[in-house]
Length: 288
Ligand SMILES: CC(C)(COP(=O)(O)OP(=O)(O)OC[C@H]1O[C@@H](n2cnc3c(N)ncnc32)[C@H](O)[C@@H]1OP(=O)(O)O)[C@@H](O)C(=O)NCCC(=O)NCCS
Image 1 (spheres, rainbow, N blue to C red):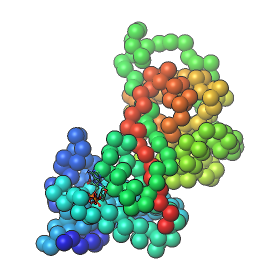
Image 2: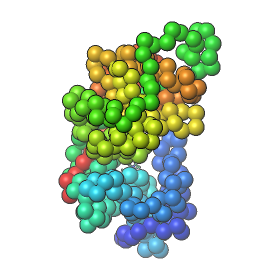
Image 3: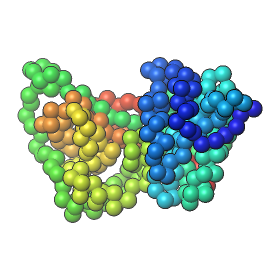
């Protein structure tokens, strides 16, 4: 028998132990856990054994007043298939509903069959797929992909707030809303509905860039450029992605990484610019 309660700082050693081998590369949960406990509008849930030792966990966050996001679902390998993952998820759903949310969402890697079967069984449905498009820049030099080449016929430049509305219209009228279910990556791998105001806010923070063929929200992060949003059209995608490649080079970025909904023409244009499409994930949703 397990009990459910809010997580405490003292749960970390037990969590570290059962998440050591979650994925081939380990797990990010132990590094983030302490920070999560301090965040507003976030609940970290644990299931505990009769000795009050954590054997499973998940994190729920309110991403907007009506949208909740569940992540970091982990069950100790010896406690799986006993309904514990689902019990924690249900607890998160109750908390989110009481906090005013109308929808709960989460993402799983498309290859994570156990997680997909589990969330489908408790009423989630797949609504979108996203992936990372990542380009690495190698040491500059002839013959490498960081080598010199003629610049693209257009550049991405910092956009004024007045560009937020045209960018939103391109997003809203193209393939993006269908493929993305209207969602964008507001925090890493967490998604909520995109509003025009999000783009205005990005412009005010000097994070909205535009060229005649593309718009991008770009958050510089050490030596990489992170794009929660990259917008272009089927006709202009090649020019837009070339301008993005050049921007990464101008910034001496080691990598440029964009979160993209899985749209074929967009992926093709990015691949032509040596972006790799990685970590496809399915976003699931449940109405509360
Ligand atoms: C995914 C995970 C959280 C599921 O937790 P769990 O406590 O084992 O899940 P539940 O017992 O609530 O499963 C409920 C149902 O989901 C389905 N399911 C769960 N694991 C499954 C598996 N390995 N294969 C197929 N179906 C599975 C089954 O329908 C199951 O019902 P059943 O046991 O009566 O057949 C757990 O496997 C885990 O920690 N995995 C590693 C971390 C991870 O991938 N987290 C999700 C990241 S998005």
